[in-house]
Amino acid sequence: MKILRPKFPPGYLENPKTLLTWDYVERRLTEAKNYWLCSTRPTGRPHVVPRWAVWLGGQLYYDGSPETRHARNIAANAQVVVHLESGDEALIVEGEAHAAPKPTPALAQQLAVAYAAKYATHGYSPTPDQWDQGGLFVITPRTVLAWTKFTDDPTKFILDA
Image 1: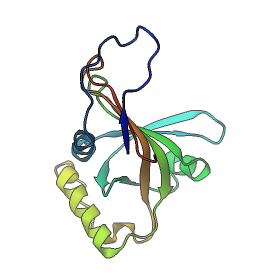
Image 2 (image 1 turned 90 degrees about the vertical axis):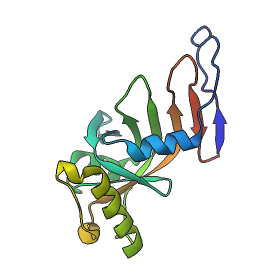
Image 3 (image 1 turned 120 degrees about the vertical axis):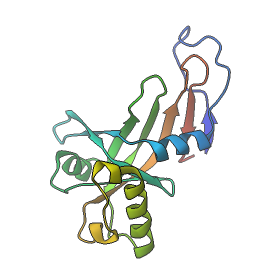
Image 4 (image 1 turned 135 degrees about the vertical axis):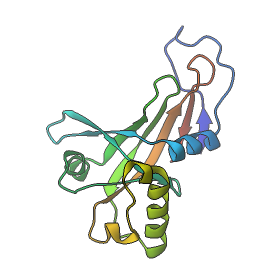
């Protein structure tokens, strides 16, 4: 993984002070409730939708019907962007999304526990067999752009380097 300062046009950012850590990124991805998933329709038009998701093992998992617009989009073009809700403390993930195969029993259990921990109070607690027939998607990040204060710590993480 490379950790570096993103490139900005001259005069955009005068004196950044620090870089964020990958631990910070993983904590934010783990704790977030809503994730904005951006995909592209086969016609080329963008599509964005809020999703519930869980961060496990360096990947973001979310579920839903394979018939949804975003699922059909990623079947045609796996390139996606995920953004957390805050624009002040931004976290933007670029990567590839795919329909996941049936998870192993261990992964299914981890997913069910992680989902229940985050979303049970909102009425969602899937069982480990929830994804036996499909409906699970996984995003593998390539790059992450994050900051807690844009002028102080914008940081780019390149994961496929």
